Length: 419
Image 1 (spheres, rainbow, N blue to C red):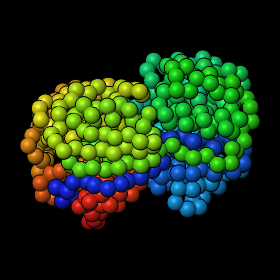
Image 2: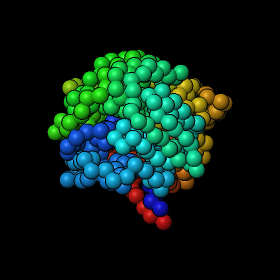
Image 3: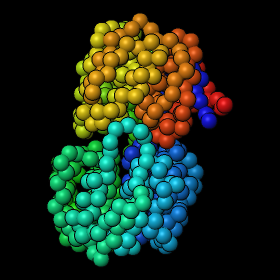
Image 4: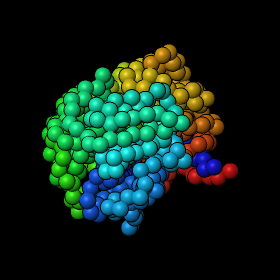
């Protein structure tokens, strides 16, 4: 099993390019099940979740090819199966996205209940109730979601709370439903807007993406737009921005969509960072101390839960006491206990963590519990005294492309090793 060995103390300097967004490409790959003809995707990141989704689509009968780094083609014209097996789905929660498109295409679908990162309850209730409202008959049997439908119909769907996954899933499925579908209290994340943009280029009639209400007028055939370019990964951009600041370095981050990371940039400035903005580029530096913050994660455009762990790592050495309240996944604090092993002063109670800044962290063997926790431990290792050994970095490989290579190019002392 791969691990990272990090020797701390280097100040990151140089330039890094942000890859395509994992959380944008996965639903678009699933949505290709609804599209006639070959779809060519550009700026696709080389991360494990993309390869897992490709493997799943191939099992369903799709032709999926990686032509070169960043360029993939998908053709789902001749599907041979409507079953997404446990062996694949357990690796990645985004596998649930194929349920609706398979149901729309084939009138039936059998998808294993999903796996993925291990933090907090993330039920598929909204996915199932939305499909049932659209006319599907669904049974949970032996760990599988078994669905059937004669014809999907447009309906009004109102979420009790915002859900990025359910919004994306029902948005793509609604393009095949007869009539109009209204998704109320919809997620507004850039990845939802990107999915809608892709579907509209394929001929879908959608309006309201990026707002609380999305309207889909379904029933139109979707055809390949030819090429579609995946948006930059806002969480990767934010991660490098935090790394530059907390190491006291200066890093130019290219291909970052500034509007997508506005709250992250604002919080870094509040913490004392100097952030210079150009077109699709930010330069982050720090010549002084890190100021404490109070952060409350919330749905977009609020502070992203996917940046919570990285900011916690940064705040462990802030000049004062910080508070983080997790408003999306209350149990998403497992990284706090690993940071404690490195000397951090963190107390977790319910959905709130109190971080008292210490003078320095100390390298230690630690274990990653999820994708963003992995990144946080890497950042902590970059500033810790001595060596840090991070186990279970397969979590990180799910969502960051060439992470250690990019950090090494900025001067970090980080190596991938094997047992």
